[in-house]
Image (tube, rainbow, N blue to C red; front, side, top):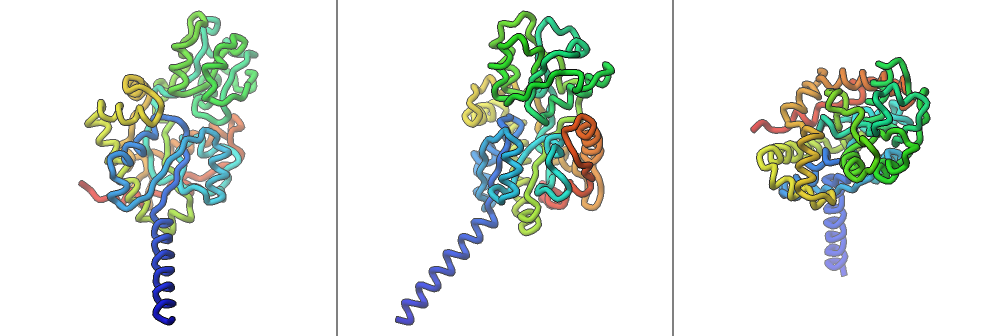
Length: 330
């Protein structure tokens, strides 16, 4: 009986070992329905994650509260959001999540849509404006209002889910909607409102809406090499996207429920994927600061001002450039 017991014990240890290895190399992600995060899907389709021994899965989740709860429970290892959203309430210095890289910049993919009744942002005073809490376009709206001597408090804000942009825009009692792609373009194309158009666009506020790759602190600390491998695949995928835009559009369309033409239109007009070199510039060298640190502070002040955040976070404590700095040079 001893040999059988030994065999069973060995098998159990082998199974436990394989499960631990799988756990160590697993990255479960929640991210909004935004084409800026397509490099994850492309890296998976190209086989990069598998080749580097990573078990990566990604699901869409637009509700930041759900994502933060999932990370706190340990249900996911990663989320991806704009820096501004990352800072939003109820985050404080102890909330799980650390920025380890960038993936894209919004250059038109976030904005505020309206019709010909609204000639300028000043005309929104006292009007109903719909927006999901703590999305980048609310920051843009706040910036434009400030220049006009107004604030979000001068509006009647109606909370909505961004995915409902098209249905909400049908209601002409809603003067404007702060939203993002692809829902923004879809709402404008389908609208019968006279003069339906973009009032504010992120293309006019470059360097503010940067999407970050955010890891759970404990897992990042325990498995730093896993995240270096992950980031390497992301920037390989970005290189592929830039080199093969037509192939990329066809591949991405299947994940986002869009046509390849729609993918191309949205990407060309709305966002810019960050290459490894660009992300390294954002993140900075180990022990140092990059341009993202300054952006973080600027957006932090805006979020505190408009009530989207309750706690002032320190950029140096929320950004870790150690993993990205270890990606092998080509």
